[in-house]
Image (cartoon, rainbow, N blue to C red; front, side, top):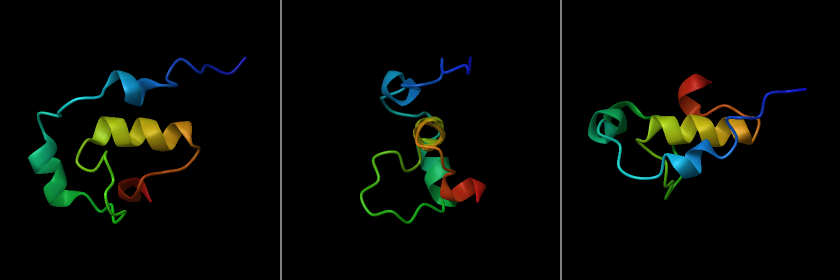
Length: 58
């Protein structure tokens, strides 16, 4: 059986990221209004749950 324990992690990680300002400086996300921009952990969890890669990993 496939391990799905990571599902929903973006909901658990909600809040402010201590590295957000540094992350924003190099984040290639171009989706307007993205609530995960600069919050790498949330972004990667979200894209993984949806079966794709965020812009930084393409």
